[in-house]
Length: 344
Image (cartoon, rainbow, N blue to C red; front, side, top):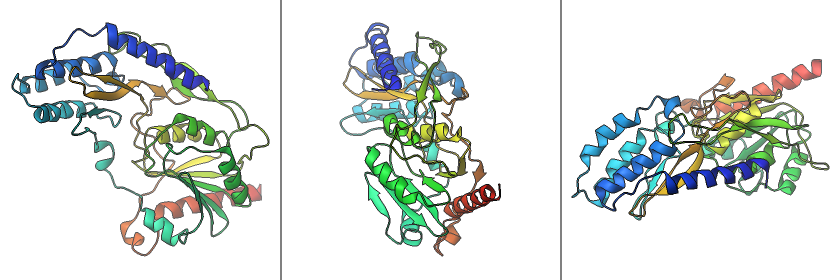
């Protein structure tokens, strides 16, 4: 495995050790389960300071709602509301009957993506698709590549075929709107086609103690270019983003944004830069949360999202006429930069 994945495994060991030895015993009753959940987050969640969250005050609001007679569904509802205070799409409480999920990181914003619009009016229901990756050549010789989820494994052979087909194009649009994330190994596989030397992809640290500010020194991790004879891309790149570009997709955008040939177009990403970790409360319910902060190459936190270089929303009226204003802006950007390169 890569150095980052080895570090993540080491971090997991640290967090598991903390979960086993630092938390007091809690009874398997409504009050004990609530206290266990609050304490797990209090000890291991990684963004209290960045978000200005007073977790003790949150406890004082929600703890009185739980009594010895609180039923399972009511307890789940109370705990879910408490977890929503973290404003984190990586925080979930899973039970046999439901899983909590914080939605306001994307639900309060325009969707800015219509799959049918792109498929019908730009791809003519064509293009090539494999494992979540769709690629085609748009008019004016602009390449288009959509990756629906970093959960789909990206093979080097598929990328070779895609980049070979798109090679004659003036530039490439990578559409990661509505990409909710997945595996960081797939981020590395894709980024490796756009770099010609080792780059600092970012930094990660882990909790080193129970305090909200107890973290290790940030650990630098790297991405290397794909080895020869793999095909690389050296022309302009425009990445399309929206609020539903989250987690591993957010990480991909952060890494790519540091490259000089890349421009971000669309809306601010949804964030989600914390490395997820899971634990369990006495009744067997599992909780997933951000346990290790990940930073971009300039040591900036991307938990709150990454702003685009060119902000464009999807115009709903023009969409009725088959126009994706965000995709059109990316095409215009590619053509302008390609023209400028030719003049040089």
